[in-house]
Image 1: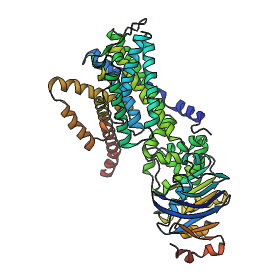
Image 2: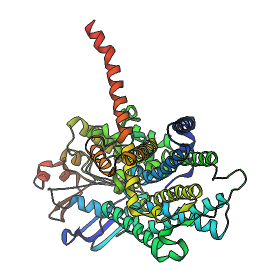
Image 3: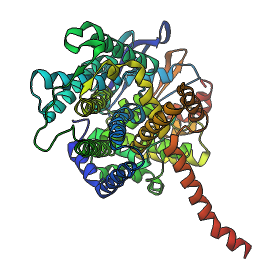
Image 4: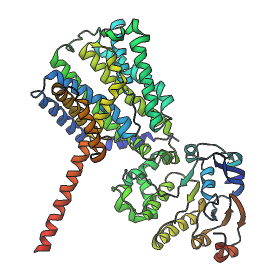
Length: 230
Length: 337
């Protein structure tokens, strides 16, 4: 599904990622954990086309996508959900979904059904400005919007960051359902309870490098061991 | 996969409350007719042409969030292309109008390829620079064709009932063009295209993440804004019959920016109200006060600090306030009881 091979990337001359490589199989939900500044967000931004790696290659579904523009990757099914929970705040919730539906060529009733199926409460806010939603509702709207169309790979950056425990459970439930549906996802997450329950694979990042890859369920369950990397 | 599904676009346009648009158009026409006893008919006609120009600017600035200091270039292109067309090709007013609009759209289409990739101050100033170049070309470089500062008379002749030298005919024709512009822009801005350009205003990168080619939508908006500005320009040609470089002067961009801010950007009613108020103030103040521009400057400060949404924003705030008060009223009474 996704093969990142030895990429270097950064901001101007400041290199953030150093020789990063990872593989994600079809239908696999993998998590990236690591301390702040480890390069987790930069890695997602590079995979989704927002940043161009100075070295290495990115292969998505057999195609080299190094330097391919984000809009082209989006049309090939790559969905990036950024960390800042920014929706189109001046548009209604419905228009936020419509925007995704038009891009994906999906009809509106189907798109709305897809979004409300993961969080029925959103139906109540359809005609409200999205800017009025809570942080958790915004995150859910962003994930729901990413589900519209024919997504093949999700890149989600810290979906539970700054959210209340009850909302984190909602997000966990949504991610669990995505996992049951065998979606492929690469998720940056610091909440180890969420990570250990959902991960098929964990990549641990430190100082711009992947220093460890865990695929054994028994190792993933030991959250105390993982905590040392945060 | 098309970035804009034609079926859903069409359904969205059909779903737009057309009756509301028709009602608004009738109200608008009635409003301009009501102005005639207060002002002279020819002034109301001038106001309406300016309102078309303000709407064109608002599409670019209010809806897509791109402030241009060069919209006069497209008005001027419309003015000169229609004038030269009427002189050298055909005096028919409709053909001259079409030539002016197409000319404005072509110039916007070519320059748009260069400028729509820019943002903020770079976008505003690059447009200003192109406007300056256009002004120089019209005023100096192509003086033999345009007569430079001396100006040039258009060769438009009456066509059937369409005699624009007749004040009543000109008023009716310009009103029709204004209503057409309003209708087209209302349909466009409430369609998926409208949602996309408003989203570009808010966060262009996120629009790209959804799969949209934002460059195309920005370019299309730039061309449409240029074409409608050129429409206003051609109406000046047809109505005034004499054109000079003042119609392409970069300094006049200030007028359209002021008008959009006074009315409230991102709202076609705001563009109309702003256009009328600006022209009315300009007429009134310039008659009574020699250096009247300073008053406009003060007004701009008031808008920037206290009235960000302009007149339409103020009306909306008052409406929301009254609604909130009315909805609280009965509750308070119940509590008292």
